[in-house]
Image: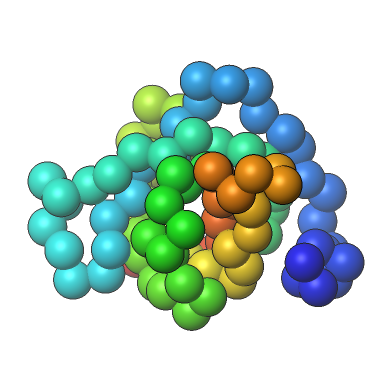
Length: 102
């Protein structure tokens, strides 16, 4: 949550059904996973995961595609926070910072 207060870029929320395609560092492109986007800014994104321990702060991965737009250059990213979407703890918001293009 502390990272949310340090944002320098405005966040833009997405509507249900918008997706991001990622792979973990050192995985094959065919091992990608898709996640529902929650918001996007110039400095990062957040997306929803259904598994609490699927991501940890510091995890690195590559963003391949955003809402069916295949990126010419993959974007390196790092997880900055993982928090429950609501009080039930069923879904988790994964806050991600863009590092660079790969």
